[in-house]
Image 1: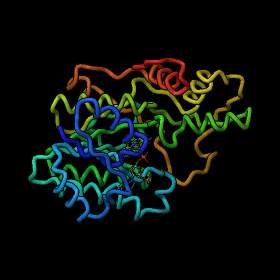
Image 2: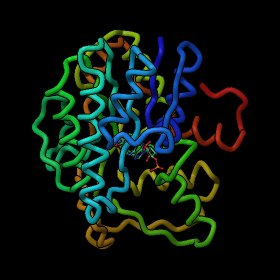
Image 3: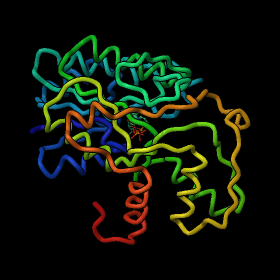
Image 4: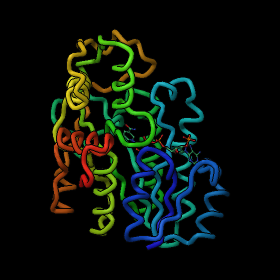
Amino acid sequence: MKILLLGHKGMLGSDLGAQFRYRHEVIGMDVEDIDITRSEECQKVVREIKPQIVVNAAAYTNVDGCETAREECFAVNAEAVKNIAEACRGKNITIVHFSTDYVFDGTGGLPYREEDVCNPINVYGASKLAGENYLRTLTDNYILIRTAWLYGAKGKSFVQTILNKAKTTNKLTVVNDQTGSPTCTRDLAAATELLIDKNVRGIFHVTNRGNCTWHEFAKRILKEAHLDTIEISPIKTNQLQRAALRPAYSVLGMQKFMTATGKTMQPWQLAFQDYYQHLTGRTCCSA
Ligand SMILES: NC(=O)c1ccc[n+]([C@@H]2O[C@H](COP(=O)([O-])OP(=O)(O)OC[C@H]3O[C@@H](n4cnc5c(N)ncnc54)[C@H](OP(=O)(O)O)[C@@H]3O)[C@@H](O)[C@H]2O)c1
């Protein structure tokens, strides 16, 4: 199939491109090729490329930055989704789009289901929910994947932050009152292709399996990197004074994904081990 991949240089986008290229014709574009906040650019690109699938991995992902750059954040995460949906309308093009666990307020204690009520507590979450709503209103021909706590070979992530900090200090503090599911972008890319292959439509939650706090994740990162002599103390979110609020519990239930594909995602601990070994060249062929 011919896939137009938007945001192909991003953390997830680069792994989606690598995943799709085995079996599909992929036209990757990023901000220098198309500004998705401009409706006419979306119309032109879709008209000229005539893809069967548009995968949108482009987004404004600086969660704290969104609090002050509200307009830009909504332009990319919400209005641009409208532009893409309108450009694909009536052309039999499937849209694959990504959203976030941050559409939920995190006050629950059970994994969120796809149909649970959304109630974002920060601007980023509100903008992603607005994007979801545009998509759902404008077309039925979509796969909307909510995911969480991404890390990958490219781009900034919590994993790189912890490894970088570990180079300059032997004492770290990490929050221990937010629970979620760390997710490897390579695994998410494979799961995305699986959903496309199954020809499903609708909203799906996809993360690596299991959950932990950021503090537990940081401990695992340092252990894998043989840096577990570094002291890592748990702190509370409010001690960090970050611009955006974060949901305390944003685990996503994946029953719908498992029913649709007959597959489960690997546990986050194994996914991270695979990722880290691949990153450091300790294996020649991680899955
Ligand atoms: N990262 C996470 O932990 C996380 C968690 C849950 C959900 N998600 C969702 O997963 C998806 C992928 O996230 P990611 O972390 O891989 O994102 P990312 O690394 O920030 O990549 C996003 C890409 O979109 C591009 N972009 C930004 N504005 C654009 C515009 N106006 N037109 C065209 N391209 C534009 C960016 O270019 P520049 O870099 O030049 O701006 C970047 O290459 C997003 O939908 C995100 O909301 C991410």
